[in-house]
Amino acid sequence: MRYLTLAFLVLMVSGCSGDRSDLELFVTTTKAQHVAYIPPLKETPKFEHFSYQSELLRSPFVPPSRELTEEVIDTSKDCLQPDLQRRKSRLETYALDNLRMRGTLTEGDVIWALVQSSDGNVYRLGRGDFLGLYHGQIASVTERNIAITELVPDGSGCWTERSSNMELSGE
Image 1 (tube, rainbow, N blue to C red):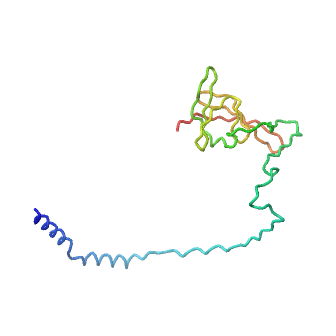
Image 2 (image 1 turned 60 degrees about the vertical axis):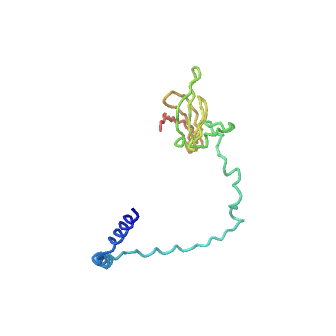
Image 3 (image 1 turned 45 degrees about the horizontal axis):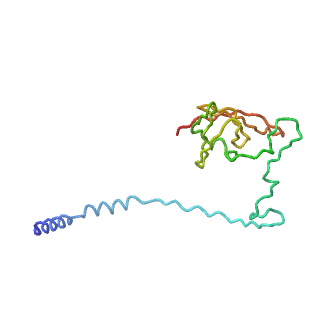
């Protein structure tokens, strides 16, 4: 048995040697005919030095002042305005595009909507709750969708109502 295995191994190794001149000729002619084109590199962009003068600009290492980040709303006009004294909910930091309706819960005759944020958290919301960037308030919840009323600035200091719907998403 041992001799049979050894004979088979010798036969296999001897089969690997042979005339490879046609293969070598093919490789050399292919290399000669096909020359790869490598495009030249783009020029590196010029470096423009920016001299930072701290007396003119805000320091990049300090957060901006609260006046610059707060919403500035002119409440002197007699028109539709959002309630700025109200504490914002967690879902008012997400755009409506980043929220998905995933289902409903029913408790008696009250229907709650299950809304998932883009970071994967699921929230239970009902009629009157707020969500979205534009002071969106839930007008009604059904088994298939959520009706939302948003307050959108019109550019003149007043706000207009806009209706939106969030459909049940099963993805």
